[in-house]
Image (cartoon, rainbow, N blue to C red; front, side, top):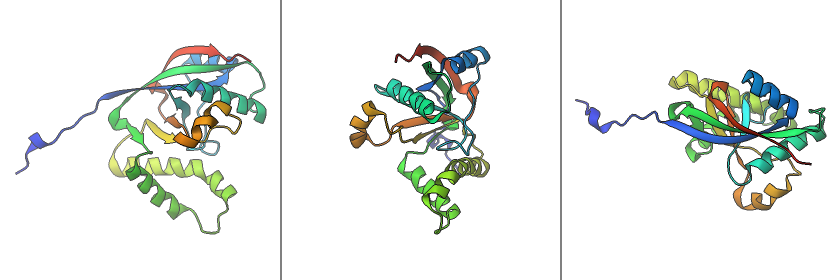
Length: 194
């Protein structure tokens, strides 16, 4: 006989906070249509979705550095940027923390099956976003869960001087990858000062 009193099932609503660096025109479009342009798997560091730096004392700097990096790369044609501050509302059962040792082990084993020993770093970087997407899709299929938001670490742009001072101690910063945009609620938009 099963004792159901020993089972605790929770599905608490999580409130996560993050920042996103973009152009002023993109921010206006996001505000008007309540829709971000999702990063595609082939362009994403960790798969498709909307990337927001986990909010903390250096989150604004990370969003600013990301915007400046995209300008230098030629992705943004305008030189007027903003930092979007957003709340992310997600049920804890729809949130995946890829930074726990357990999930890192599972994801690492999954990725190793897809990478050939002769693959070079350039090829692996091109495959990386797709591997993240495939992992999450496989996890959803095998467990019945829905992953609306996941947390992972992403290297900041190389010229992010403020974060580089603490990166030696903290490692790469945490980032939320939002796969379901309905979880994002914009709180504020702040112009980046040159």
